[in-house]
Amino acid sequence: MLGINGSQRLVLFNIPEGATTAEIAQDLHDDGIIRIPKAFVYFSKLSKNDGSFVAGNHEISASMAYETLIAELSKSMADEDSQAVVDVMFPEGITLYDAAMKLQENNVCEASKFLYYFNAGNLGYEFEEQLPATSSTLKFYRMEGYCFPDTYTFYEESEPDDVCRKIYMNFNLKIKEEYYQRMNELGISLDEVITLASIIQKEAAHDGDMPMISSVFWNRLNSPEYAKLQSDVTSLYVENVIKKNIELDNQAIYDAYDTYICNGLPAGAVCNPGIAAIEAVLYPAESDYYYFYANVDTGETFFARTLDEHNANIEMVERIRQGLPAEGEAPAEGEGEAN
Image 1 (cartoon, rainbow, N blue to C red):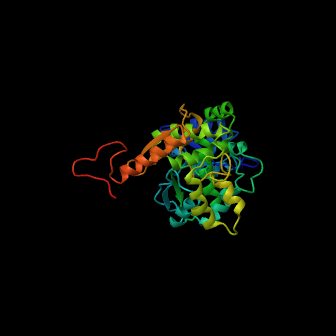
Image 2: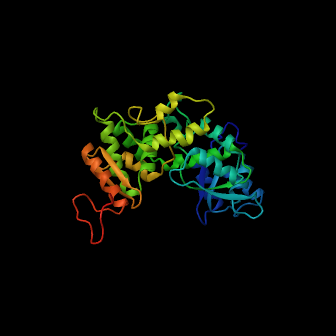
Image 3: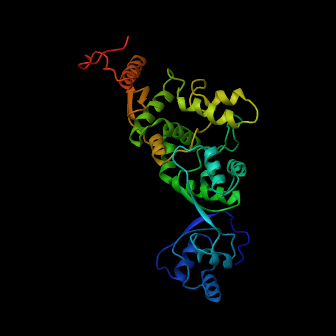
């Protein structure tokens, strides 16, 4: 009843609208949070909380005493008399550093402390069991890619550890069992999925382009002729994130992230991808493309099988951006090429 020896891992517990105390107690028991449903009902009546539980999601753990559980389930984060709360939105493709700065700007917790605790991990969530036992010395932020893009509600001046648990819990819920089954089919690890998804997230102008862009990278990863992914977003991550935040220059780390230098996947993710990018890795389109080039003005992406086709696409896009006719087209009346 005191929660002794219970797991400290936060879990998301949902109280359905109109649920009775007995039904809530049984759900808590079924989820492994409490051992004696009748005791929970008894304490609820004793504390005069019977019938006052708030429908919706609550963050609780098996280590909580019954009185603490009852108090947590009887309030919502929106209660006027509760600690001040703030909504923080992490967009798809945000870097871990920028997420930390958002938390600090919204008075949730210090950016440096969040980065420390988030990258330390080992919070007991299932997805962590899929990660390498030891982190590569070439990784910059160990858990870049695992700060799932979403809108989170936090208490102001929270403990960094609590903030990290909420984000870890959300990631854990988003990665479904079918995803792990698909990873096994493809022979790819969770860390590799998140790393590739982060590149696709940054490269794609639209979610609809992601499966085809994924096919390009998969084709390169499976072909000995294309050892390097040659993704600009990895080079930009080195310049804009790693070099600006690393304590000491480390060329080995720079090279391990720059896919114009390293072979295959970089040492780690370059942002935090959303579900569309993750699913694009797991379910890529079928193609024989090895190149793509995007028109940043229109958001249109052009794919190519050969370097010659790729260069032709680049030339076509640049001519379009300059307002020139495509190669072989006659200029419109009153229009001509600049000398």
